[in-house]
Length: 310
Ligand code: SF4
Image 1 (cartoon, rainbow, N blue to C red):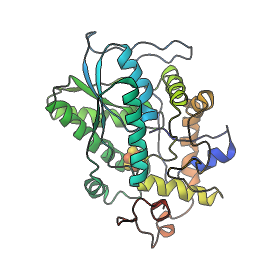
Image 2 (cartoon, protein in one colour):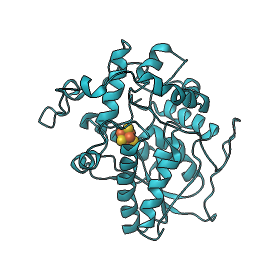
Image 3 (spheres, protein in one colour):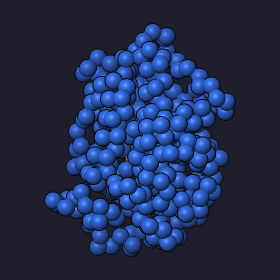
Image 4 (tube, rainbow, N blue to C red):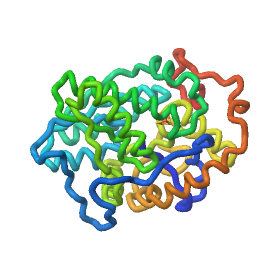
């Protein structure tokens, strides 16, 4: 998922983005099309050139923009599959889903609204509550979403599937792809999982151009309650306002995508690499102590950001 993170574009913006427990994130993009920096976007390729029925698992509208546009322009028949029980709280989940539906409707693409089975997600996350992003909890999170996507692709005759999780440089592309390939193996790779380098400079820039053009909601954390908690802990320690769920104002930075240049620069490979190189040194405290006594609200008030904004 796309996040608001920056190290130098804006100090406040930057500080607010860095999660506390994000020890070992992100990696360099690998393989695939191009490491381009020019204006032209290389057309996508599939194992053969014919049109494919593709099920695109989407985590959010901002991450799906360039992938969807590329696939449509390449002549493929795609459906968006929204299955993200990791997103917390429900209000944020609904915002991200509605933004994604808006984009699908704009392009006339089928949108599959899958389950929000948070109970199963939390069951699988048990014991991994303090894992860093890019750690075991994220592997579980990708596994669960890819398993469900592969099942839907299998049951509905898609040729292949892939995920927008692979498009962000803040995500470990290899970790994401591993989950996709494992899920495809359950069905003897029919459908197969499409491995491709979605993290080129050109794709990243195009993604942010679409985001600004669509004025997508700019989320401030990866998605799960633990990533929200970690971001807010970091912000608190750095005197920053907490993440805001919904509303016209973000906790830090802009509420909507408006500046493609700044956003693309924020996700440059150098920025991402520098962030992870320094992340380990920025976790000086025992986060478990900070969280003592705090509970996730599952009741009628679950959508209230004040009760769920750990
Ligand atoms: S930080 Fe949370 S929402 Fe993001 S990939 Fe990891 S487990 Fe999933």
